[in-house]
Amino acid sequence: MLDKPFVIFFDEIDGLQDNTLIAFLRQLRDGYITRPEIPFPHSIVLVGMRNIRDYKAKIRNGKLTIGSTSPFNIITEALTLKNFTQSEVESLYAQHTSMTGQIFEKGAIEKIFEQTDGQPWLVNAIAREVLVKLLNGDIKKAVTTLLVEQAIQNIILRGDTHIDSLIERLKDPRVRRIIEPVIVGSGNAINILDDDTQYCLNLGLIKAERGEIVPANRIYNEVIIRMLSYNTQFHLESKINNIWIDKNGNIDMDGLLKGFQQFWRENSGIWIEKYEYKEAAPHLIIQAFLQRIINNGGQVIREYASNRERIDLCVVYGNNKYPIELKIMYSSNSIDIGIEQLSDYMDTLNEKTGWLVLFDRDPNKPWDEKIHWKTNNLKNKIIHVVGC
Image (tube, rainbow, N blue to C red; front, side):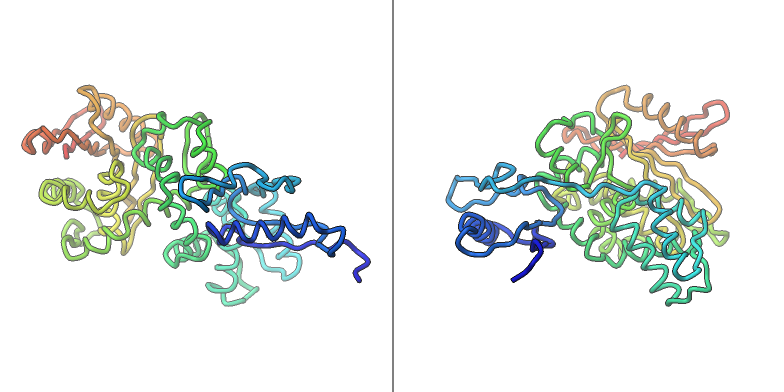
């Protein structure tokens, strides 16, 4: 006999689905009800990415179960492990420094917090990747910003358990309904009180920030786009090459986007049909196109503006930055609005040349009207309007 309360933690409970989940919860209920006669744990903790109220399993056609917080009236409390603050991240790493003497440089900690927004698994995973994989346990070497950046890329590309779980969530229709407008910049259509929005918030996929719905952190931002467009990147390998990168390491962005226009005209119908996220397909395909070009020495920095019907990209290659704005042609003034928005984004990057890529989704408009190129000279800026 135990002389202290017995508590059981069931981790990754969201791995159980449908009838298996129902059977498991019924066993808990039966144990709870019969606890006066048969010994039963003092408490049980179900640990997963979702609150139990988010589980809906069909055990008979047309009948939904487990729709409430506690289907068996035995749940006492639902808790959410919140993100770490920056000071908590610093304190966590300071414990390692205290034990080993290994230093986390200030810039490295700031980079981790900037990229993770304090998401607990990511904060720990990045540190482990640096300490165990990149430094091979050498505690004499400091954790630097460059090591952190490499660790983040490794985790994204390797698809560790947490990232793999995130990718799986993107297949959920409820998640797609929220994530898709975020990708295309039409997040103003998202109702913050909607059940699907709350579901994605509870999963930690998105957050509400300054009146906008955006991915929960910069790493999720990157993972969402990369994974949804990965298949396209893979198959584009035989269709594009690095002819748009000169011997000095500069991208001929005009030539690259003109090449994309031709690709889009010839292949868009086929490629769009391959996507579950059909509304976001143009944004995903052009980002796959760009990612394939710069995979060997650059990056694409993505800025979501979910209530302003656009996505801002900064392609970084070598010492150069290339500002690009992606926008859907919703009305005749979309070009003027896009030019103004891109001009503001260029100011934040201190760049004088930018590209506004407009996707016209009107199926009745001929390609000769959709595909166009116009260069606008605006005081001290040059903005190319790229019609697709």
